[in-house]
Image (tube, rainbow, N blue to C red; front, top):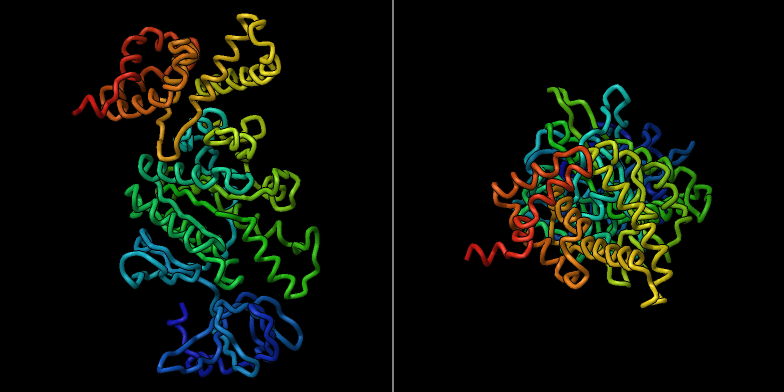
Length: 508
């Protein structure tokens, strides 16, 4: 973006400049610029070093009677006495299909990817008003993650805002990778990944995952690392949302991941404290709720200009500290989203993958987008797992357990083993339902529990065959759970063969 501006041209055009009087990086105080507007881009006079022009850009952050506060986007130092000119433009990002497969910063500068220039005839402001109610449509289409425990127990809908929360290193990123892969590879969606103040190695890991899975050409990474200016990190999620809105307007369903808004809030707090804004709870500024709410409200399910519906589904991430749900930023985000998926550190250390705590996870609109069969399964399993948790308290009696208690414990262990899923595996919903039904109908016993992972992998491989997929899809079309279980029971031998026969070895 800096290449589009020239200090002397902007000075000649606007006829107005200011002088830097104080530097508190990334915040600087400027005297002059009496005509500056809030959030306007300003340009600093360049320093010529070795024939290269080091142009600085900044954004007007606050207006005073005799001074202007500006956030500088570059980490290169600026000095008191430097002249600053207005541009009469606001922060924008180039949008086009040429962004796909790229890693860019919030200003549209390429950080990684093929080609060095983004060919775009359109730039969009990164901060815009959310669409109104007349432009929105009821969420009524399932959003499938490919992760069985989420699709069955915490179902989501297209256009939903679902918060992903948990302590550090509890599998949140692995779940996000699985979801992105499932939506891009199998549901023709576009994925926008906003990495806010991450390590360079983390951003590189995301890029490598997309390339390895063959989905890089339908993804965009908007990334800032911890070495970038706090003001640039602050813009990251807004730039990602603007790019998502471009693809939405093209008629494409979009998934946008904000990883993570806790880090984003901390950098915004740093900037606000430097600006001497009055601090509130945990020293966050008073407008921190508005800062995130105006971002997330731009998601949803919308009417498309050419007819039909198109959606932007958001998965914001928040980091907890020692499982503290009462943290300021997590509770704020819970209040503006449609539910949350909680990754429990205790379950993670027990070896569960993904470590989703079902009882503490919530989805407010996802169930209305699922079929009646999935809703009935959800009710049955939720009630059963609650009973299973109670029966575990009796397990220390060992041989004195009644047959009923033993059955509940064995079935509960089988279900949780079924929910164990590697993040590289995406399980179609039909496979999830059929495999759950086989466990529910006691096709397997406790002695085969360790093989359930192999059974699920074999069934996923078999589902790639069109004939097998047609049979499984027909089974799960029933509206009543008992009817579907009856269909599965009729096909016991056929399904058992699919689960116990490795599709890859069969092809060989």
